[in-house]
Image (cartoon, rainbow, N blue to C red; front, side):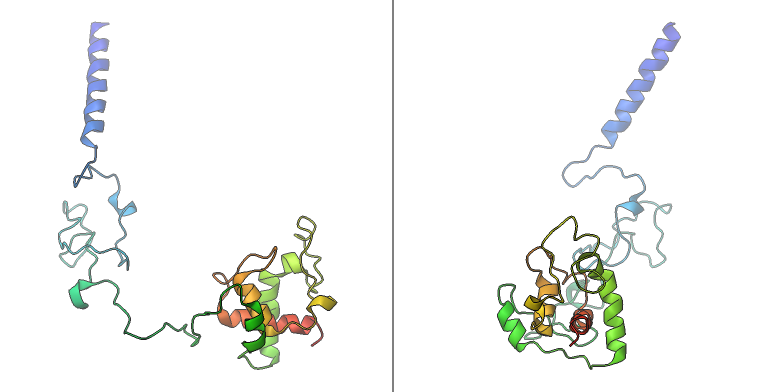
Length: 211
């Protein structure tokens, strides 16, 4: 029995020592199991590690062939080895389609309705793509024909009937703005739907209204 007690005590002591060795404080972050799961090897624009030996603990964990530590992620080709360069002064980003950021605020729907014009051509291709996008993002609430009869409408009364008289005269700029910022029960979709796709949906909604 004494032997078993000694073995049990030794086991508990070893476990406690192991846990103590894994403690992290200050600049000492302790030991890590599977460090590849915690540290991203590719460049991260908001993370800056300039120490070329960072992560180069042993040959076992150094998976790079460039003589750098695994966590080093600075770009030597940029000033100050930045991973993301500062944009030129007085410039704004454009999408790959050339769209500028949408700057009309949420509370300016009337302004958007008056001034925003659909830049896409009135073609069957645009309508067909708008129909696909409508089915993906709008059908579940507004219904396939825009009559507020989608499967979600039963749970949330008050969804807009896009073919009703109250919506017949809304512009495509109005629709684009509401898709972007949301309105009433509808949540904003600007982060989910690209600007060009919002215009395609707006064009298709007008078709549902026989316009």
